[in-house]
Image (cartoon, rainbow, N blue to C red; front, top):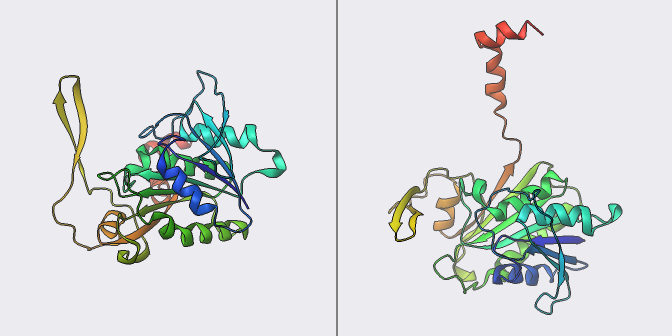
Length: 264
């Protein structure tokens, strides 16, 4: 099983080391790390085309993997690895992106560089999994995360090898910052699109974006934010085709569409 690993916190981040350690436990896994040379959080799905990319081979914590640092974004790393580092008959079987410092929940998937790494994999026809850990307030502590994700990455790896993962879908995994024995389980989750509000606060340099979160977190719906805060690992399948098929059909009845459609 050929596995490509990337992230948005940079190749020297602790999270990608922990992810690699978990993947090294998989039997027969051949690991490749291709990650940004510096932190690229919040860059979304940005790609580099106005300047050159220069992948640089690196040692990676002394672990038995091949690794490159790339002067670009997470999507660049996956795209460049696919086209530059792998032969046509030796493409990765699956891409794992993370482990991100802090969660990527709800509409975070549009801003997240971690998610873009997994999304770019799917665009290239490879299964992709993004993993994020709820340790934003305790960033040097990854606790039991390796033990938590080991069965998950093994399952995704096996499904990828058996062609059991659907095309055009990447998987967004969010992990609570808890001891292993306190994690309640792994549950499928929908996106929680309204669990925070954006705020700007002023400092000497200008305005900084912050967020406010609700005080109460009822487990009313199986949404990623709510499940995570109640101690579950939340797994969300994200389809990359964002077309509203129902609305697309309804547009046939728009007067403008009816009028101009006849001109064809």
